[in-house]
Structures are given as C-alpha cells and as structure tokens.
Length: 189
Image (tube, rainbow, N blue to C red; front, side):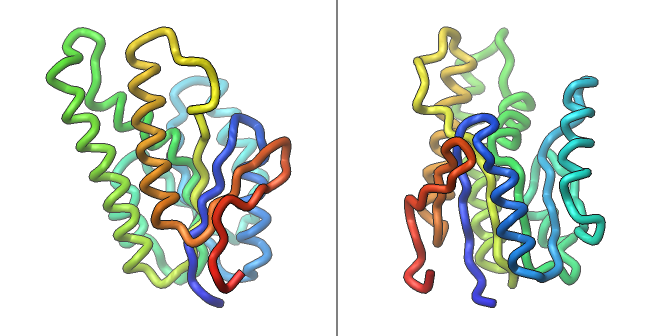
C-alpha cells in the first residue's frame, strides 16, 4: 500500500464520514479512528454513539480534542490507516479554549497561532507516521457571511486550516449529496 493523505471536505450530512469509512475499509489494514468531538450535551453523546456503531469493532479509537498529531504518534500502534474526524470540531475546540466574547482583540492572534500550530503539527505527523491518513472537514465558506464576529472568525480559521491541509494532501474530495467529487488527485491514482 502506498501511503497518502486524503482530505474529504463538504457540508453537514454530505457523506464525508461515510466516505472516509468506506476508503478505510477498502484498504483492509489496521485502522486508528481519531475522534475530535467532545460529548458536551445529550445530543452530541447520541451522535458520537451513532458514529461508533458505524465503525468496525476491530478498529482502534482515539478520542482527543487537541494536540491530535502528537497523540496519533503516541497511540498509532499497528494502524496503517488513520481517519481524523473532524477538523471542524478540532478548530472549534481550539477556538473555545482561546477565545472569549469579553476579551476578543488580544486573543485573535493567539487563536490563529494555536490553530496554525495544531494543523502544522498534524501535517508533521502525516510526514513522520508510516500510515495513510484520511482527514474529514467541513466546508463552511460557501454560505452567507455569518452575522456575528465569533462565527465569522470560526469560518475564517476553519478555511485557513482546510487550505493548509488541502495544500499538503495527495487527494482532496468534495462531498456533495453523498457523491465524492475529485478536487485534487495524486499522480498514482
């Protein structure tokens, strides 16, 4: 198996996670599933359980909200395929740690640096770990301009993270109504 990094991006319920699972199953190799969601409320707990039921029991799961690249390197085990689901929640986790409505101005640069650092560390993990990576993220830049400052900041930061990942990735797929559209393909595909 040739190691590669695949970014799957799309809107909510576009089939991103399902396509990531399909790609990982096709590889027929040990999988590490990296979940960045936190169970903050009952609805989110139910969504997480739904996602867990969709994965084979033989796959290893790593639940981590930040420092994803570092934790993957620590927990990779025998996995040769790593799914990171999802970058949108990772960016939200970091934004929530560093940003408050009370003191916005001084924290903006800190938040940007934290997200760029996190994504940079994840890309470094892609380079160092001998595995294929399937990364899931949301595309939030095609809708209307959000009405409030924090939502606009989130959209902008996620857009930057997605650009960094797409630049590095061998393949990028845009999911539309459950259909993967190839945006960027590796030469060997």
